[in-house]
Image 1 (cartoon, helix red, strand yellow):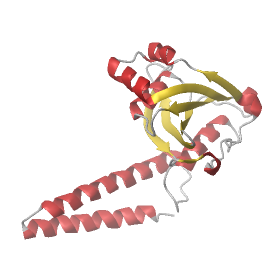
Image 2 (cartoon, rainbow, N blue to C red):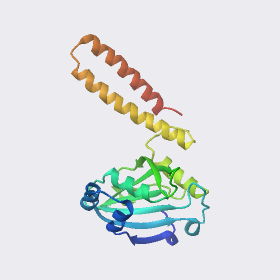
Image 3 (tube, rainbow, N blue to C red):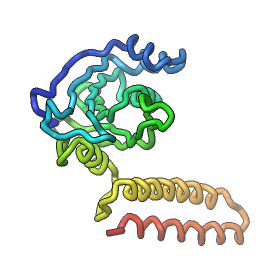
Image 4 (cartoon, rainbow, N blue to C red):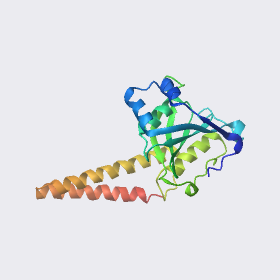
Length: 219
């Protein structure tokens, strides 16, 4: 399914209590761990020894965690807190019954404490059957390229030739922001009773839609 070498397999269950202690969760987050997660498994370790790919200063290893869910949902706070605590990129393989999805965050080392990470946006696949997963896990000449290419494959942007990862992330963030602005404007237009104000909002809406269309078709 993931096309990862057998020598990278760890397959070790991580007790939730161990994560609580390492993360320092409050009662609210602990409740989410208990209610949403059945098991957490350290599935694979992608390193120089297990993949023959060289590490870099930014990416020394990549971990793959399989999380078995009680429901078809996981709170983003759970992933964020795991990611902040572990100083390596983590590819999450989320599993609910016979369906799976992948999730990974764009994250960087904390400039004050290098053992902690600053977690930004998460990129995810849709829920699908296991055999439908089509992600090239080990695409790249080193582990940093592998990590960057994982993010590229999970970013929901098509028809772009943008190679720079940071610019691609900025493009995705602007697209998501525009989608939210468009929805907000559409709701305002429906509620607005003054004709002149409705016209002004509609002009603004069309501008946002045009900008979104241009970004979606950017090559």
